[in-house]
Image (cartoon, rainbow, N blue to C red; front, side, top):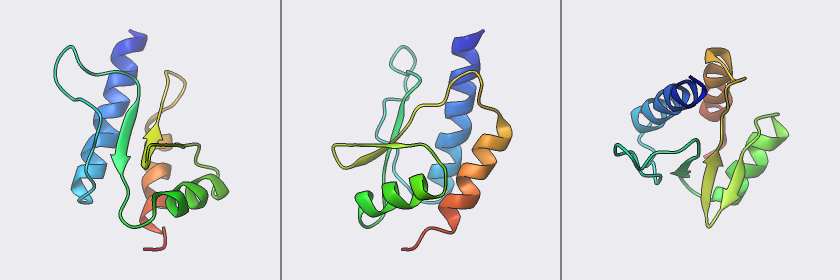
Length: 91
C-alpha cells in the first residue's frame, strides 16, 4: 500500500510538471518507476533548487535535475503546495 501511495503521488507530480511543459527525466514505465522523480528545470536548476528550498519545499539537485522524493506521509496538499510555489518561481 505504501508503494502504491508513493507512485500515486508521483503520478500527480508528473502530470503537473508535464502540464507546465517541464520534462520528467525519471523512468515512467511499468517496472521502471520508483519513489524518486527528477525533472528538468527551465533555466538555472541551481536557482530553482535554492528558491524551492528557501520556500520550504524540500527537493534535491542531482546532475542538473531537480529531484522530488515524496513518501507515504505526503498528501495532496503537499503536491498542491509544491505547484503553488513552483508557479511563483522566477524564470
